Image 1 (cartoon, rainbow, N blue to C red):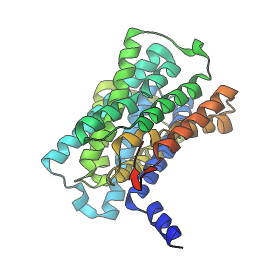
Image 2 (cartoon, helix red, strand yellow):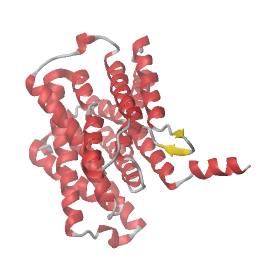
Image 3 (cartoon, one colour):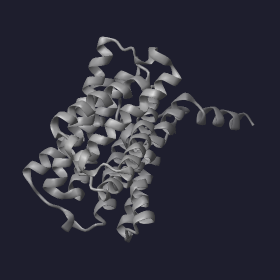
Image 4 (cartoon, rainbow, N blue to C red):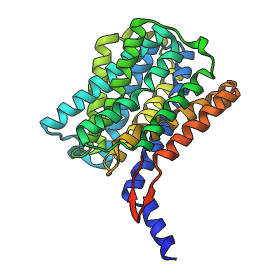
Length: 314
């Protein structure tokens, strides 16, 4: 009975709840491809889709903040504003811009593989900024995770790969900018409420994308009932919902280098949505990639007991 009570306490501990929130954010992010396809289907370009995600997310979070905490949730100090500015410009606007350029240059498969190198950047920066120890099991989990993503995206077919210097540079840049969500988000979430971080980072993000892409004429051209319904859902589910879970999880005492691997469940969800809703086919290699990716998430959370001392080998 005592062992069961101890197990229950471990499962429902603040730290474990944080990892569950990260996992939940990954699930919601997995629906991004669904909304992108829906918006593309009504004539929205990739740049307009990226803009609408942040633009609608920003306006959705405003009434939520007013209902949850009133005007005090909008208050932020100078350091917090700088952190949100960095999140909005670097990890929201410039990330989306670089990723779209990479897709246009080398195709979605190669761009996706380059994006999945983001956990490597997070791992390196967690050592530099948070003094984390990276064990052999954690490194192995990271390699497995990237390999699993590679198999899921390509199905083992290397003909999907395209090479372009500009595409590779922008793809790696997108991965680095994407990794900054975890690093800057961890720093910001320690002192600022997640609602406040989301509000200001989305604000700076859509303003920057608006300057870079000038989407207003495109909105007028495709505006219609379906466009706005899809845009609202896109702003709510894989944007506001996912980022509130993610930043809420970052407030817990988590190992930063684990987080992107746990959030990579996004790739599994996206694949399953493609199969179920869009009748996309899975071959044996795709399924193997899913198994390897899920295994990497499990492995990243293993604790191995050595001489009565709990050692986090991952």
